[in-house]
Image 1 (cartoon, rainbow, N blue to C red):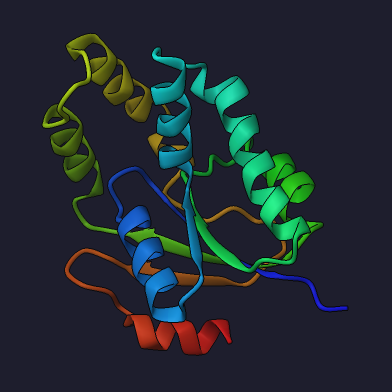
Image 2: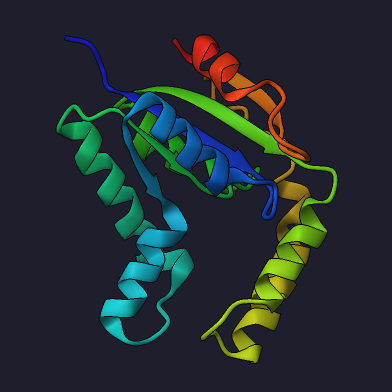
Length: 173
């Protein structure tokens, strides 16, 4: 029996992960599970900010793992940190699916992230500044793809996509 396909879109904050993941899912007509949207959905239900690195991330893994366990191929995206995310990828994704890592880069990713966070509506100034501070601490651990033993497709998302979405999909298939 064949494993479901998991297209894991990774990259530094602001590198275009979520946008590319959504476009890949639309192009391939499969489900997109954005990690940040799962976390925000939990926060909306709970009416408070959750421990994003603790219970929130575990619920995200359970969501994706449940879909993979039901034999549903999908696209997901998230910021993966070298030296921290490798065991989670092995435990929650690689054992359940055929994983392909599409890794994004953009020349101005750090600036894009900071600008986007400062423009967020409905988030406290304290939360936004904390989020930017966290990025500054983890940035160097997110710019390169993890070495998790899966194929990697590097994508420059500075201005459009290089390679293009059809080319990425050809490489995936």
